[in-house]
Image (tube, rainbow, N blue to C red; front, side, top):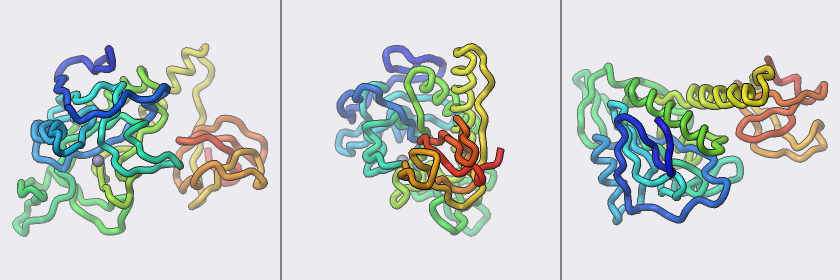
Length: 275
Ligand SMILES: [Zn+2]
């Protein structure tokens, strides 16, 4: 898999341009990837609706259940997948991000005879379904599983995007629009994707820089940890607090205060970090 002229090339990849696209990205963009599920019945039907000029929605890529990839919009051009969205003070993620739609039915309901049914009335067997809580809500629900081929394809795509663009965030639609959206949902290994892609990326940078030691990571041990512009409580907060169990990269340490990188950089109190 490689990117040439803002198009992804390789096996099982089809170019199918959508008319639903905006301006070219500003310089330095895209620097984020947004992961979605289609809540649709097939990759082909999603490509069709993401190419319907009346619907005014699109994404850069659609990933089918066998790992097949459709590209609808070139990576230097804004696609319309994020809608009203915000993360770490940035609003309107279409102008910052590549959108990847994964063919998945989303939330399913038990049909009373041991199977599960989607909003568009397709039936799924139990081995295609997981029961889990969503990060944005308390109740357990049933979710359509992603296939291994899809997950592998998405990981490979994100690695490839990171090699070609200065990607620093991989986020779920559910994170940038938590009031409206549940995709990609708990069936998708979003944390593992971030750790895998960004750690590989940093390892490569470290090797490129002369093979210094690999980045160190720490875990946040308190429910909410303020992240500040400098090493002390007199410094302004730079972003929303980090939440417990967040994994951060350690940049430097000044005894009681440690500079860390998450999707943002800043200083936190060292006593709430565990190596
Ligand atoms: Zn979405």
